[in-house]
Structures are given as C-alpha cells and as structure tokens.
Amino acid sequence: MSIFEQYNRNKENIGRLLVKCPDKPGIVAALSNFLYINGADIMESSQYSSDDSSRMFYIRFEFYVEDLLVKRDELEKAFQPLAAKFEIDFDFTYNNIKKRSAIFVSKETHCLLELLWEWQSGDLDTEIPLIISNHEDARSIVEPLGIPYYYIPANKDIRKEVEAKQVALMEEYDIDVLILARYMQILTPEFVERFSNKIINIHHSFLPAFIGARPYERAYNRGVKLIGATSHYVTNDLDEGPIIEQDIERVDHRDNIPSLKKIGQQVERRVLARAVKWHLQDRIIVKDNKTIVFH
Image (tube, rainbow, N blue to C red; front, side, top):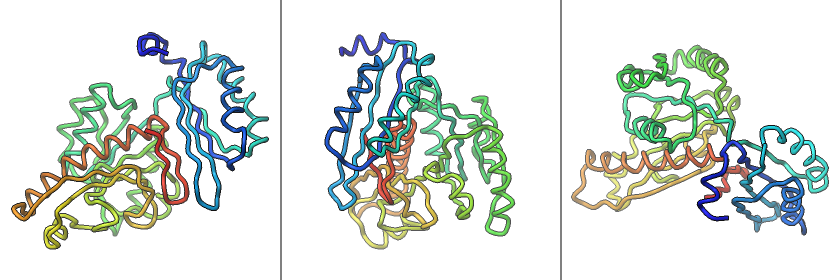
C-alpha cells in the first residue's frame, strides 16, 4: 500500500489487534487469514517470539476495514474460536476511540510542556480531560488551554485521602492512562494496583542507576560521563517497573549539577513523550517486569 493510499483512507476505519499466546506453528498464518477473510487490509505487522522457557508469542497488527465502526462487534465475536484454539490473550482497539489521559505534575513543568505541545500539534493522539498537581505552578500554563486544573496538596501524612480524591476524578473523567510528568509523590500500593500498567512515569536517570531521589546530584558526585532518563510503568517497587523507553546524553567533568539537570530535562521530555505515544498507539505489551515495544 502506498503512503498516498494510507493517508486518503478514513482513519476511523483503522483498528489494532494485540496478541499474546503460547508460541505454536501456524499462528501468524491463522491470524493473517482471519483478518483477510474479514475484509481487513493489514497496514502494519510486528511480531516477537520469546527465547526463554516461557516460549510466548507476541504480535501487533494495524489494519483497515471499510465500515469498521459497524463491523467491529462482529469482528471480535468471530475471533473468539481462533482465540480459544491458540489460547490467545488479545485486545482489539480502534482509531476512533481516543484514550483519555490524566497528567500529574509537581513544580517542574518541562515534561508537562512537552506533552501539551505534542498534544496541541496533533502528535499526541489523546484527550486530556484534566491535569492534577500538588502545586499551583502549572495552573497558568494549563487553564488557557481550557483543561481543568486540580490543585490537590499531597504529602505522606494525607496520602490516602489525596488518592481517594484522585481516584474519584479518574472515574469521573473516565481516564485510561495516568501520566506522571515529574509528579514527585510516592503512590500507595492500592492506587498502583487499581491502575496496573496504566501509570507511566518519567525517572530522571538511566535506570537501574540512581534509583530514587536526587539522581543528578548523585550522578555528579559519581563523576558519570553519561546521564539519561527512563520512562516506565509504575509498580510498587520504586523505579523498578517495566521499562518502556530510555535515552542518554554525554556529559563531562566541566558539567556541574545545574548543567546536568538542564541537559537531563531535555532527555526526560523526549523519553516521556515517546513512551506515552507508544502506549496510546497500543505498541506495548507487558511481559512480567519487561515490555515488548513494537516501534
């Protein structure tokens, strides 16, 4: 299919199918044939077979079907026998249904600004119904865009009370993904479990180096020659959730702590934005504490 043909198709007729199942012969042929006989034109296909003892198979299809909005229920129903045959864990998602993102931020706004710029330019395909912060610093950035801004002070002594308010807002706005754009608060196990694999964090170091607080100061004291950032799903192990994306920049002995932070903030911005985009595009499958990311 030519690029011209792709861009002249109705985007509402584009869907995605993510598959996770035991690795067996014939899976790709069976899946491709299913899409073909149901009138789907495969636009993109990426697959991976694990080489460990689990022997699992993963694949992502992006496909086009005329009148998909009308046919999708029938398509999912028709898939059930194939799913049972190959023990498939699957998700169908559809281009016309945008995921709804809640952004959490504290005082530092560089990651928030990057996400908002990507969203305004149309490169972050999501709805942003609200932004939550434990500080007022970002209000003047957010409210001119027409996005509700919720100031909810937070600390360890009132954490459960704060999270109860946040959960209520997530339910009220029907949120699909929570983005921690330098939201400098520890989340409770109950909160994390409620939104498993739906909370995306940015950590300002190249994990597993410098887990926890003040990584730039610790990196400077260690005399590192590379600094980085890591975006990952949040789990109850601090900064140890499944990694989605990482990047680095070279530094040297002439860099002090402020310059390390300035360089690092540029890395944080692009790493978080890429991770969020891949999540929104259903390019990520979580496998234990790792991710398969179909770029």
